Picture 1 (tube, helix red, strand yellow):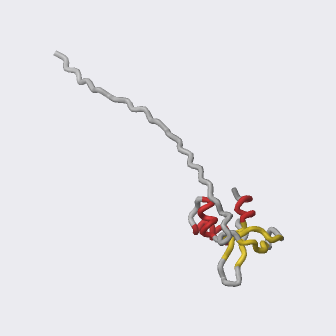
Picture 2 (cartoon, one colour):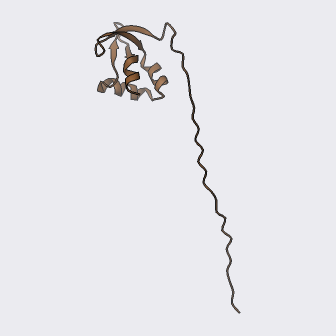
Picture 3 (cartoon, one colour):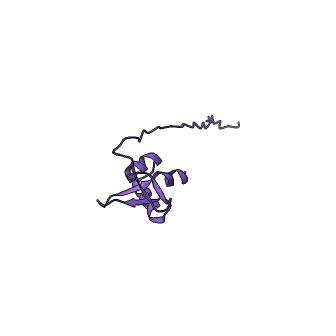
Length: 94
């Protein structure tokens, strides 16, 4: 007498679901956007704090500072010592 072992194998399908999230940020608030001279652009341009740049680009703040350090993002230092990021350079690096 022959014994057979029967296995039931359940095959599962893999499904990939892509979710796209779109955000619109209104940064036209007077306290967030400051016109300042950008030496790299050679003109007065709208500038924003690095924290706002991080929100716009969905990047960690450290990544924004790295971009400033490498020259990828233009920046200007205010007399108070705070740093502003050029909106033109953010648009160029998208």
